[in-house]
Image 1: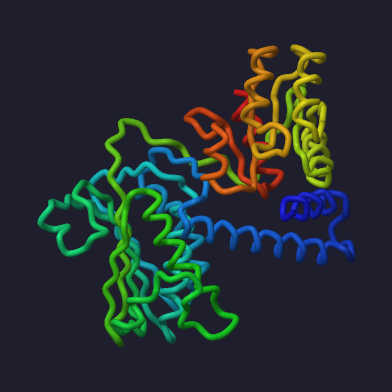
Image 2: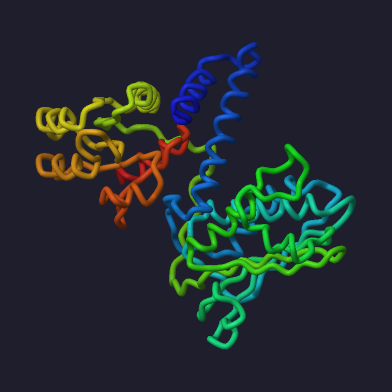
Length: 354
């Protein structure tokens, strides 16, 4: 339903001229839906059930690209210090998770500082042996890249530190925090086979260290295209399969707005029939994963038998566990999480068609 709200808000915004009285209302709807979607993603991240797209990343480069955004987050009164390590700091993870870790930790650091202060973001590398890991059951021997965020704020006592990763626990005033920021960081670390260490003293500030397994890769993946890029169709036909009528109608309009010819159906059985009748005219099948009649995975296997050249892109609002159970989350499969924006959909379509 958030996908329907977001999609129609985007479609409406595209049709109203700049300065139109309804523009402010539509922007408010879009912002509220995006915040609700982000809240859901944070809950899924904490439960380690959020589908991710990991790739080899140089953590120094990724963090450096986020510094401008982080400076805006913490404000002008607080200095942001960046200390990258000299060694290669390569990890294998979804770049959006780095964004989430830093945004949550830096906002918490900002809120812990009254007046001027300093937030320090640093990277490092470390190798942990069995002796070093005996101090904590969550620590596992291996090579790690460490992403740390330190502040000169008020610090925390031991009782508070013991609770900070619990969902909805917060020391902030009512309305200032959801209590999901640190649980999200914890969930992301766990999802990537890492862990989080905290050092804090009342009146002396706090340091969070996020340990992520070091990835020994020869190539590092590029960051996604800029947010301004909205690639359009190149004459392709898309078969859209979605059992929710409101979402089917909205996504059809998004696809047509991007220049695609769209064949749509709410029935998985009808999707196979359309693919059989239309034949090679179909370039890509864009299908929901979890459907009442036949799963998206089974639909794709049936269509692949009659259209071996067709490409596939799957979508779902379910968590990664339910999606994986449908057999569509293997390596090389293209997937987009609901709710998605027009930009994200446009990029995913071109990626799948390539």
